[in-house]
Amino acid sequence: MEPINGPLKRAINVPSFQERYEAMRREILEHPHVQEFLAQHADELNYDNVERNLPKLHEFISQSTECCGCDNTEHCTNYLKGFLPTLRVVRNSIEMDYVRCEQKIREEERRDVANMIASMHMPKDVLQATIHDLSIDDESRVAIAQKAAQFVKLTKETGQLPAKGFYLYGKFGVGKSFVLGALANELASIKIRSVVVFVPEFLREMKNAIGDNTLNEKIDYIKKAPVLMLDDLGAETMTAWTRDEILGTIFHYRMAEQLPTFITSNFNYEELEHHLAQSQKGDIEVVKAGRIMERIKALTVPIEMRGKNRRM
View (cartoon, one colour):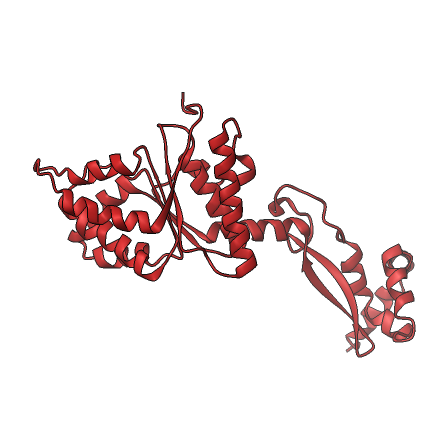
């Protein structure tokens, strides 16, 4: 019986195979990136080292070594989407690694930012806002943008969150929710986690949570958020239970722990207090409303927001 390597040797010695092999070898060794790499490591690699690692060098030159700038790494043509091949020498042998391309890094950074913002019933466009996107068409909006930027700057410089947030109030559609989303994204970029909540839907959800025994868990999640943003407070139908057991519990905890809280409302402080005093039963509970307002005032700085109605 003929040894198994006999036919292999004959196949290798076929001129067409040799020619293809030599052509591929020249293509690899004459590639500018390979020549540059071999020149940098000439004192570590010899002829045999290079010959043994021709397959790795071929894999290297078969891919892009620079980010192609595609809009999504799913469109990347490299073997590992979003990764670029690099060469290094380890113990006189050539090794190939893969590193993230610029687009991959951008995508992961965006994903990290998104993961730093927990949302409950908030629109996607609000959650994608940035401070730089804020329309500056009124002095109040200039002041708000400056205060938001200052809040982020102070957090960066001190490594600590300021204890007080903002109470943004103004007419319907002037962009109060947008400010919350912009601020949440700015904080996310410095790894500060925010929970952004649309209050009317949240309070409805709390009523349903009684039935599935998740009420305490959900309240804890909201009240202990590093940064809490409550959107459209005052738009809900108020009951004594939602005011005292839900909002009261959240505000009391955050005031005691000095956790920054941001609130938007169509009402100013005085109007919100009047709203909180009302109940579905028709009772007027001034003292209990006043207690909630004391906590809100301890947690926030009131800022009126003016401007055009952007929803019309």
